[in-house]
Figure 1 (cartoon, rainbow, N blue to C red):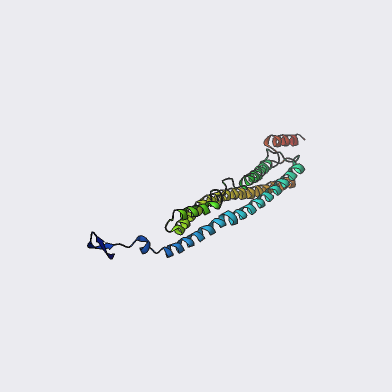
Figure 2: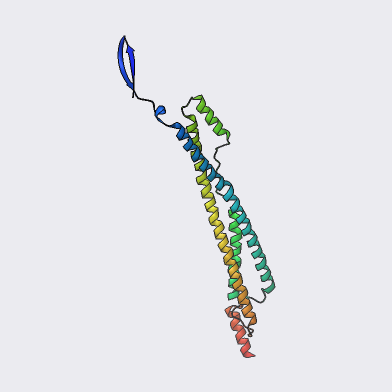
Length: 226
């Protein structure tokens, strides 16, 4: 509290006046704190907007290449051996599961690539928005305009970060599903090949691994007749 003497109608009064908030508040430290917070939020923004986005695109492309290669390999196997394997047999069902898995993986990966939830920019229209905002503060002779500007920029950057994190998280989940489907497809393809090799190495003409039950029973009956 500061004491001042005030004269009114030739009478002197002693008045105590409290210092203003601006005088009591350490705005210099506050500005530095806001600048540090803004620096961190901007780093996080570019990590999600550029770095993670770029990494996910690379992962998506790799998954597409793997899926395309598996589709080609499975299609080739089917064209070579479809006459020897009944699709309703054990081997055939395993082959179908493998093929469906890789088709689903390819489709989900294509769906995830564009990041359909989208990324949010810090500005509403363009960076001129912030220039206009600063100019309006100047026109209004707003006290501590720089601190208010920093606080507004931090709020908008963090709002963009929240949306961008959700976008990357959603796409990351889809790519993880794609990866597991590709792994499943590859495993089932190996099982299918193994079953076919076992069937081919058996001495019996009739194989339950590559024939459905009806054809297998018919084959067994014909063998017994002969």
